[in-house]
Length: 121
Image 1 (cartoon, rainbow, N blue to C red):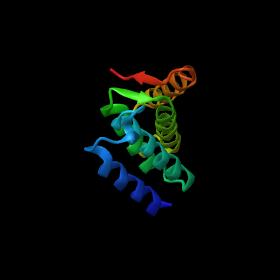
Image 2 (image 1 turned 120 degrees about the vertical axis):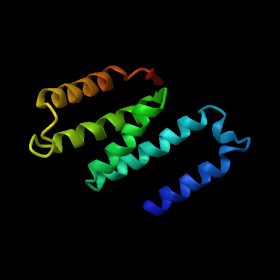
Image 3 (image 1 turned 180 degrees about the vertical axis):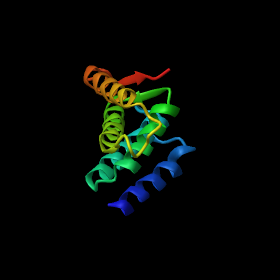
């Protein structure tokens, strides 16, 4: 599976700077988000919540707009990792803040079912 993901990533970046029908209806960043969403789902399937959350956080922090499905995958990855964190593993984090982040991500994910993209600005 990892080889297929790597090949898809390579093909995406080969097409990145050329006119391509791949980007006719969805932007380059949107296609990257779709690919990253696939990687997030794969990492969650193999119980690698840390890597899934790392990729998801990149999207949540860096992208101005996020397609709905990649947003849902990103927030699930972050929530999954936060469920695995114990207060003793990160003593400087307030447990209430961690709980609030999980709840907020779940709320936004549940409310965005009809949107095609989410404005993250």
